[in-house]
Image 1 (spheres, one colour):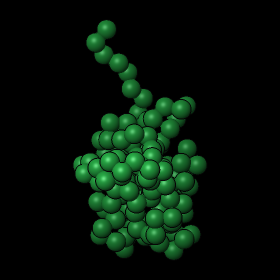
Image 2 (cartoon, helix red, strand yellow):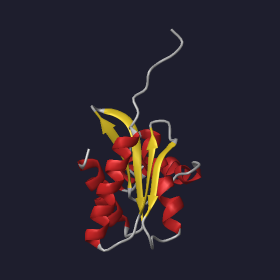
Image 3 (cartoon, helix red, strand yellow):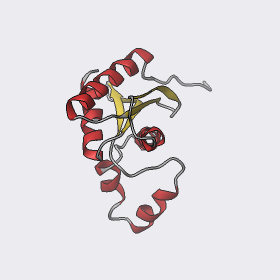
Length: 138
């Protein structure tokens, strides 16, 4: 057989995640951009709250791509993976669309990587909080 089947996050799930992330952002008093990508890194959904910082648009996309790349969260997940390896630590920043800053999380459904979410607009810990709220909404 020359093909295989992949499991992907649905547009319905992406909309639920965006709504939950934006609800949490409002509670935190921040404006965010949220990007959802499928398991292949193709953008599935995007939203930018009114007043979200301009840089948050590209940063949210990079965070989602970073998280889906190896199924590791940006921030502590990736940092823990590269911190003790000088070659990987220096080289990771040369990956296309890689960002170490937290706010990107893999979307796992039934222990299968189905996509990722990237959030930017607040401090990276706030972005992570919004991403966690989005994932809990699934």
